[in-house]
Image (tube, rainbow, N blue to C red; front, side, top):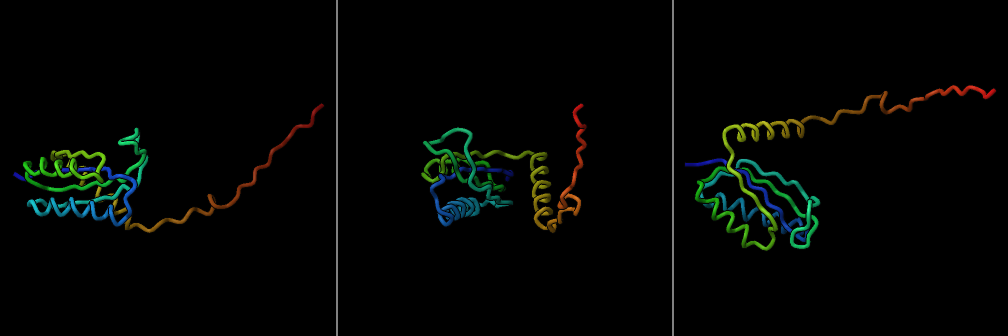
Length: 138
């Protein structure tokens, strides 16, 4: 039985962009090699951690949404645990409501990315003069 999952991992902040892409490719290839299907990927970038993990205060966050057999999750998380580049990870199964929400979120992000950037209204860009009346002291 195939289920839909979301996994987020935090990679160490000392990785170069090429090393980060290599780590992501490793896990997407692992999912595909084990009969899974990558539905969506999103790079959240370098973010500050809420608390230090392994003496690090920031990390690269990456989200992968995929469909796979439930027995595969243990194998995926074992690989996360063995990889010294990964400092934290979480994998959750999506129920039908969460999967529908994830689909809407992807569509909204795609629509925002495709929409042209609106120019600022002229009134907001123009300086506004304000007259202040000061009463003379008696």
